[in-house]
Image (tube, rainbow, N blue to C red):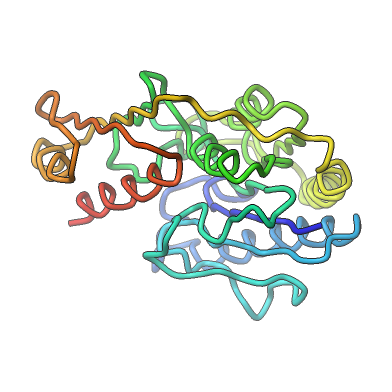
Length: 269
């Protein structure tokens, strides 16, 4: 049993404000420790169920947040940015199940620190529907026939996870009161729940089905500033459809992450 973990930060218990997620800001070092701890719980749960290999992909911001010295030594760690695949880097058909840890609601929706790929995107839509990072990674998983077995984060992303990943375990570690506020579950409850859910997701992985991939992949991003949309429209086949919105039609899910990575870099000035 080979387990893949994509770990974000905004959905980690104890993380509520933007400054906690930004390197160099107050609370960031603590958030990294909390993130590493939740990953370790999931790794332990996977090995409790007999996993032979676990790959952890650091998927937040600069993608170098996880403390390697404190990570469960049984897990391999993929870090750094840019990297092919971004939040789904390292995933392959060799994996039996994927865990999405510390995830959050999409841009424009309720939830703690909700956004999609970067806070500079006002909204991200696929085939005219708002889409979350969890769903984007889920589509890449589907392209490799890997089911999503576990989603953790606040109550809003867990509600979405229950809807789009049938049979997957979801662990609500906090409840949203606003963009930068929420109630966190007791640490002991979070720790027990994540380890148990990871164990169950690994045990039941072969009973899960990978998601389906739409026959048409039309990605649309609403940018914060007109010049960002203009620059984004310069990639092949993309088009500017109004002053702040760019659209592109893609061939496969892996291209979604690549395009979003490039478009996010356009906003990084």
